[in-house]
Image (cartoon, rainbow, N blue to C red):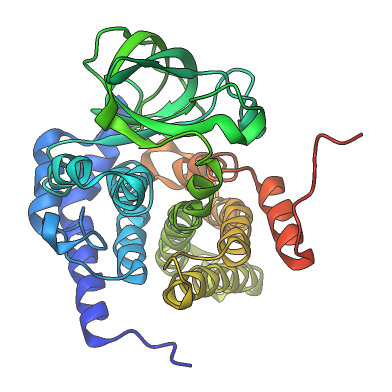
Length: 390
């Protein structure tokens, strides 16, 4: 068991760190203040640097590296802000991976190079007004129409809604009950009948556009089907990597908070000495460090052990454990960071209050904290729990 990164991994991590710190810090601040997503020019720079294809196949322009390498890059971006990291998250651990895993060769050849180059963005659309955690209650339908489908429905909480070019959309392909009729189809922003709602105003996640959208008789070619009826279980099995990406976004916020708190407490003086000399501050910093390191170890374990799995993906148990823990500790770590910085931590100019606001999102997105705990218990016991049973 080796806890050290290889030379190549360290070099990749350092490259991502230098780029994020030198090129994205001021941009991240402006995105937070003005609430706009990563500009297209910068997205293309991401692509040129290889950051959008770390663990995607070389045949489409990716680097063909492993999941751990992808998460190392993602953490460095997330330490600057979740907003500048979001395109990396979607490409390396999110909906783009769904296309890579289940899309047809033609779909992959069309979409993946565009994403890897930073030319196009892919979002995932799962939730509906009456289908969030209970996702199998979704009602969006994809009905056969000649060689294609006509899709109707309404999607909520789509990160990238109205901004992204493609939408991996969960829909019902048959009248079979529950999960049996569900699959996924790729919708495109400019298709006739795609109707996007207003930008949601959230507590955090500024710079990550979120919007509802209505799907009104949208005609979709058959080649846009990612996986048809009965594919819900396969789609969920691939969600382990997304959980690790979600956890890494949390980790980045927490690690960034720890770094900022360490710097501040060594510079700030009270009673004639740096406040880090006070034991109360030392205890808080140690608590922050323990939680950050533990979260990182759980995430990296899930990523590394994925290579031993038949599908090459993190297990439900290890990815849910990593996500749940990281989602919980990031709130604690950011709050402690705010506390040791005092009024400066609470001030919008210094960024710690932004970390605290963003920290709460990840324990809601991608499966709430309590959902992860039921996943963990289910994996330990060896069976799924029927939440609908009385």
